[in-house]
Amino acid sequence: MVDFQYSAMAGRLRRSEIRELLKLTRNPETISFAGGLPDPAIFPYDAVEAASLRAIHACGRHALQYSPTEGDPFLKEQLIQFMARHGEPVKPENLLVVASSQQGIDLLSKVFIDPGDPIIVERPTYVGTIQAFRAFNADFHGAEIDHDGVIPEKLEQLVIRLIDEGRKPKFVYLIPDFQNPSGITLSLERRSQVLALATAYDLVIVEDSPYRELRYEGDLLPSLYSLDRDGRVIQLKTFSKIFCPGFRIGWMVGPAEVIDKFVMAKQGTDLCTAAYVSIIAGFLIQDGHLEKQIEISKKLYQRKRAAMLAALEKYMPKIDGLWWSKPEGGMFLWLQLPEGIDANDMIDDAIDLKVAFVIGSCFFHDGSNRNTMRLNYSYPTEEQIAEGIRRLATLVERRLAVSPVR
Ligand SMILES: Cc1ncc(COP(=O)(O)O)c(C=O)c1O
Image 1: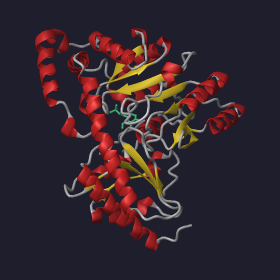
Image 2: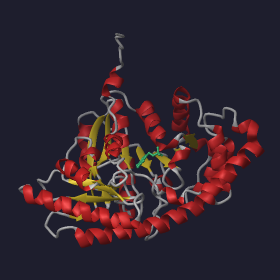
Image 3: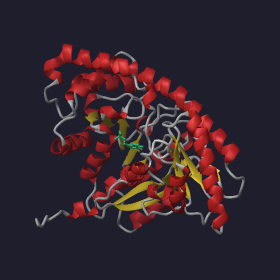
């Protein structure tokens, strides 16, 4: 037997609860609201095929070679133009191409987190971020959110407390648009308030923004990055939700000094993001396919969101303490059950009824709020959404019948 001497970090690594849960949903009859997957029916296969051939014909030597760690220059240029079209002007030295935003989160951890460092995340927040920061032994502090996103007064109290303890947070990690998991958006007024707080207490803000462009109603809100006047916002962007996740293409935007640190961290991780995929992505953006895909996704997901909201309205029991968010975009909706109901206890029944969801508590760094769940509506068909919510409502009814609701 080999005695493998693992690092302390390896000891902290955990498999993603969602990825584990997804295994349960392999049964083709199961209707899954559990993943965070775009609908493959709308993946732009023809455009990708054409761009792939073009990349190899037009740029074969570059496409099959290493590229600069900062990112393939052609893709960077296309990303800069894309950002400018969406109200976010950016200079080349402020942008780093990464292997999707999960890599960005990992680089962020490498560059900022020493074991025990305090960081602030929303309650709830993206589970993949909890997983990454936890590996670096971050000291999590949760900022409460309501229907308009993170609550500035609560955030300020938390920051003051940490500073008073001599433990200024390394950064505040926020998902301002159609947050994963809750679907909630940080209001415009609060964006300004959060930035004013950041200036007052000299905080770094991390804006994770995979869903911003997927807005189905109302106006696109300015990003924290575009509103920031101090150079204290680091933004994470990705192809995954607005194009397709198989590309593993994303980008980080931030102050040149910080981007330089990310570049050095990335050199130890993967040297560079794949040149071939980068060039394909560049052609797709140049030819307008990214924007086209965003429009197609918005139309489809808007219908699916409406289908889910209608089904919830129709099938869910009308009782106090049961509510769900009404996202204006993105891919997720948040369902809260009455206090005392544990979504964990519903898993066996869910397998039995062939419907899958993600337990909300895995989006809380302390595992609390067990009476919540995240529902994804981008992946299932509209018919599956209606039937799946009907099954979920049966499950809730069953649980209510056996659980004393506090
Ligand atoms: C908020 C958030 N950040 C980051 C990611 C990671 O996405 P990717 O690595 O595919 O860009 C996700 C994926 O669901 C997400 O919801």
